[in-house]
Image (tube, rainbow, N blue to C red; front, side, top):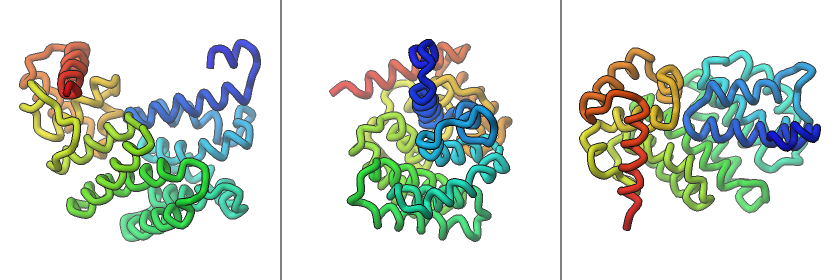
Length: 263
């Protein structure tokens, strides 16, 4: 990004911003992702090149919804729907259904997530990151099902998402999915060893988000809970682990995950 800006390479800089925003989203920082992508996709003089804009819209909608910016998310969908109807991108139809599901009321979201997964399956043999995008949809659907207290269905969708991310080598997204499975009480690969095993599944998820640099508000948005709930659990985490700062917590999480990764 620094090199592109220094040499005035606008399209390369836009791609780099999109990539950085995907990292933010994968690590549970939707506010940062929405801020980055908003400049690229929302109407205005700084809107990115069309070739990159169409790639960034699905990520922006997801980040904006998690950040509570629903109207911004709706603003970009009309143009994206026209692009999806054009048929040039085999993933666009499924991504559009996923975006609508994120914005839909509960009585419609279920069907939209199912439609998105079906569209992914219809284009399974096409180029363009189909496995990764399907896993992204399955993860969001699994999160939605977990919040609706449908654990068996949520576990199935999250297991599918985890397999897809592992197959793609998308480690950050796989880690996020494992956190969702742990919140359901499901056993998964990469279980933490040592001190972190004393945490409840929800405390463990919050500890991981905080260790990655997320604020309490960002954690609350990612987990669909209140900031007060995050504050409460984080105090419990500090007490159980005997740490006094977020820096100490991050160090302990890193050490525990390294230990867990050892054969």
